[in-house]
Image (cartoon, rainbow, N blue to C red):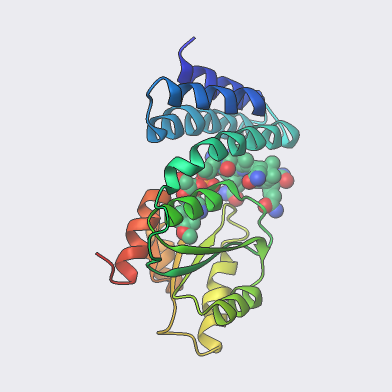
Length: 213
Ligand code: B1M
């Protein structure tokens, strides 16, 4: 079977070890990490999302698929980062907002930001506004990245932006948001500084917000 199909199908059935093995095989065969990520891992997760929505599969299967995706991402990670000891171009506090435990997209954004030369302080999942504020202050970060996958947790992005304002951090720190349910329109509505449709776009926007060429 085609290696990308192997990756996608093993991800769908939650076979983490096999996904990692096939991702490595794909790399050894000369495929780029971008192709493996988009046409193998993402393709598989897209099917999982569709089946989940249609109630053909349930949370345990989705969790297994997420673990398999994570295992594949871990193999690709070092290639995506690959900046060596280059001087950092900015510091980002990154987290998934309160009530939301989805972390694959956030992790991917973190890896890509690191790859572009940012220092990334990943504060995790289910992060309330005050924790974002505390981290920005203690880390002296220039950028806050928030991820949300649920329409019910998106409002916490607005709450966090308001909390940053209340803490007097407006002007000192830029905000960037993303996640499957987030749009540019929502970004404008809540007054976030930038939106990343995917991890690559998040990096471009992060650089733009900090005036980095
Ligand atoms: Co959940 N889930 N889930 N889930 N889950 C979705 C999001 C959903 C769309 C599925 C569906 O119905 N089709 C739906 C949300 C509906 C809605 O609100 N509109 C949903 C639901 C309903 C739920 C629960 C409520 C289910 C339940 O309990 N009844 C529950 C909520 C739990 C909670 O958070 N409190 C739940 C739970 C879970 C699992 C735990 C089982 C698991 C997460 C495991 C994990 O993350 N470790 C899970 C998963 C895996 C999914 C789907 C299938 C896949 C999400 C994913 O990881 N995609 C998802 C369906 C879907 O999105 N199509 C679904 C891969 C990932 C790389 O993509 O996260 O979109 P994504 O990230 C992208 C971009 O969005 C962007 O870049 C990334 C890479 O390109 N991006 C950013 C993300 N963050 C960014 C930040 C940025 C910039 C860009 O700047 C900082």
